[in-house]
Length: 90
Image 1 (cartoon, rainbow, N blue to C red):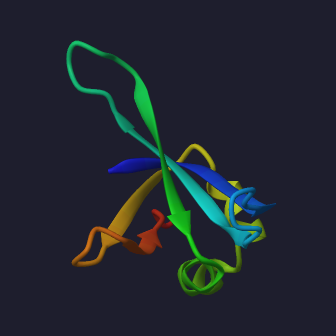
Image 2 (cartoon, rainbow, N blue to C red):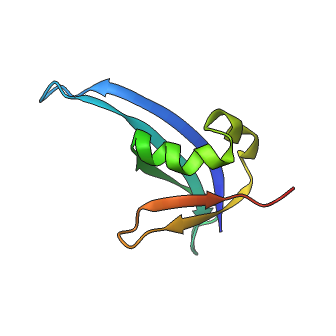
């Protein structure tokens, strides 16, 4: 179980190649392992397409702000990429 922290829009030009980089950073946190305590934040990169496929069924990225700080189940694909999120029902 993870804690949903939020989603951040990323849009910049890569200096070395001039390539336009667009996507989203998904921020979640997991419990730290002993001897550490608290939560350890984790950033996952999502393309626009992947972000839309995950968040459209939840009402879009903006609608998910209400879930910040709540527990979330993360569905992971075969290559370790996030394929879905499941928030607890209220």
